Length: 246
Image 1 (cartoon, rainbow, N blue to C red):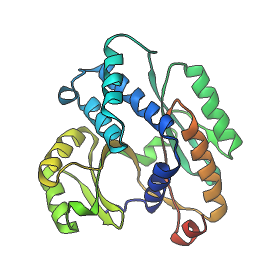
Image 2 (cartoon, helix red, strand yellow):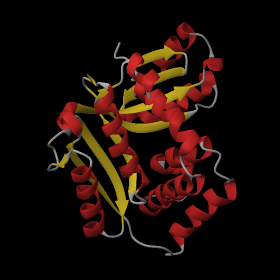
Image 3 (tube, rainbow, N blue to C red):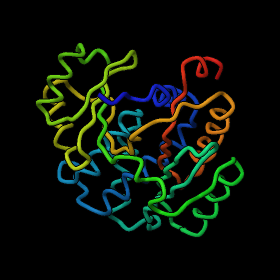
C-alpha cells in the first residue's frame, strides 16, 4: 500500500506546536463560513461544512467560535471569498500545490508568486503539477483506536482504499467523493477520528537532501504564514537521517 509520508507526520506535529492559534483559528473559521455560505448551515446536511467543523474541533476550536463562523455566513457579514489553486515548483523541481481562500485575487496571486520566486521556486499555470497528485480523502485515527488489523478491516468495510499504521497513528485514504460516507462509517466502528479532510496525495515522492529540505521548509512556512493560504502540499519526503538534522 502507498506509504504515508513520514515528513507529513513531522510537519503535522510541527504545525501543532508552532503555528499561532489565532492564525490557525482564523483559517479554520474562514473555511467554515465559506462552506456554510455555499450550502446548508446545518453540518448534518452539508458534507463540506461537516468536515470543516470536524477539522476545527480537532484543533480544539471553541464551540462558540465555530457557531459564530456559521452564523456569519447567514447574516451576510464579512467578505466574499474565492477559492483558488496555485501550482508551481519549489527548489530542485519539487511540485507544490497551494490552495487559498481570498477576497482579493490580485493580492494573493502576487504574494504567492513572490514567495515562490524568493525561495528558489517558480509559480506555474493551473494543471502544471496537479497531474502528479491524486485528490483523495484522508482520515486519521490515534493508535488507541485499535490495532492495525482492526482498523484495516473497519476501513475496508467502510469503503476505504488504503490504510497505513505507523508510530503516529492510523492513516486511511478513500475516494474524494466518498470522504463523508467513509468517515461516518468509520466513526460508527472506531469512534471519532482525529481528522477527516481532502488532500492532494503525491503519486510519487522525491527524497531530498538537507539543503533542499531547508529551502523547502522555508518556502512552505512562508506560504502557510499568508492569511489567504489554506493548505500547502508538496511531493517530497525527507529521509530519517536528514530529518534528524532538521
